[in-house]
Image 1 (tube, rainbow, N blue to C red):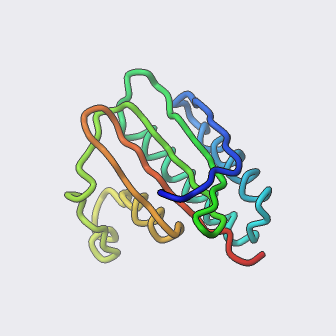
Image 2: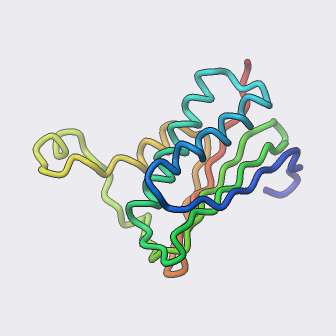
Amino acid sequence: MAGEAVMREVKLALPMVPEMEIEASKAATSMAESMQMSPDRIDEVRMAVVEACINALEHSRAEDGKIDLTIQVVEDPEEKLRITVQDSGVGFAPDELEEPSMADKLKAERKRGWGLKIIRGLMDEVEIHSGPEGTTVVMSKLRGTA
């Protein structure tokens, strides 16, 4: 993050209610379009934002019932979109999560648990910071060629 310049920024506080992830994805889409990101890359951003917001909604148990969303266009040295999804929930240990396996999930009663793997596959960079004061997911996507 050293040496980067924030070109544009949007901050939203979203209530943890069903479909708030749609509003978050609309904001991220607008920023990605403003930097002329390709439609395929925009779709990947949109899906990653939806997954991050749903994870916060389903798992954080945040007493304040909100998600703080920050969307930035940064130059570092290439132009990229950086999205931060933050909650003030109970946190978790990202390093202790078991990597989901298709074979195991097909046999399991609960098929869920793919969110972080999906986010990591869709975005160019993903950082997760979590503890008893909440979780912060920072995802970045290079603009790439339009």
